[in-house]
Amino acid sequence: MNIYQEELLDHYENPCNYGTLPNPDISHEEDNPLCGDRIRMDLLVEDDIIKEVRFCGHGCTISLAAASMLTEKIEGKTLTEIKNLSRDDIMDMIGIPLGPVRVKCALLALKVLKAGAYGIKGWPGEEGE
Image (cartoon, rainbow, N blue to C red; front, side, top):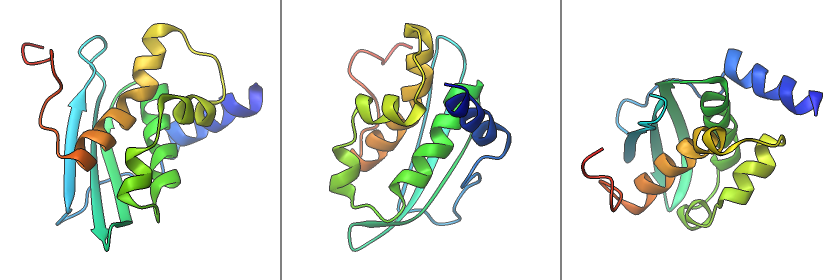
């Protein structure tokens, strides 16, 4: 488990693909109202393939590390492959057990990514949050 914890900490302290893209094809941003974490993802897509990805935001170690790890995982993938990513894929990537509140932190980047890929502007039931 220490290896996973060290990898999470490394992604938090030295995030991969951190920043923004000047003219992204897809850009989406969401927050976790329970803790205040906020993630934005920018994607450059050519022929349905993710050519470049960047993320920015603020949050806890788990949310930022998950975003960094996810950007590494998706570069070169198709939009269809991204749409098929699941909660289990993220939890396997994280590699350590998380409590319910931390699971929301870990899944924030996936929520942002999928909302952008599907063109979703808001999630059902979250209008007032």
